[in-house]
Image 1 (tube, one colour):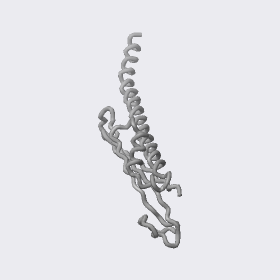
Image 2: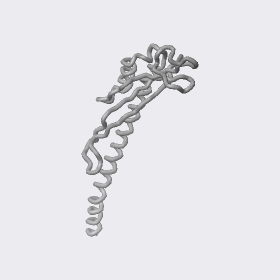
Image 3: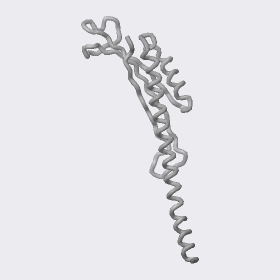
Image 4: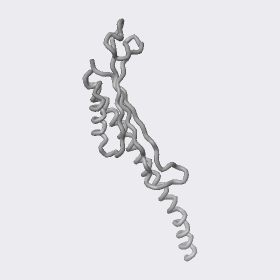
Length: 142
């Protein structure tokens, strides 16, 4: 009977670190997914603000503020807003008036969010910090 009790203790000693590593890995993957989903949501919030009309489309600061307000729980997130134009016939446009002579100018807004994910502990094969980025592009209402 004592021999079986010792065997169970050895099995526990072998299995416990493996189970702890699996649990820690699952927590890290969950944190990484949460941060990425938050970055995507912030990018969508920023372009949602910018796509309201042509006045908000050129308000890069307003789009970046909307993104920051959506991701208040992510420290160190950097939003970068921009806008660009295309002609409805597929040709390029510089967003200047009269640029699309034979077609209509279509305005788009774009917001890129970036942040660095830091792991809770150091793993031998996995880097301790990972750069994440998300972007959203939306056509401006006209």
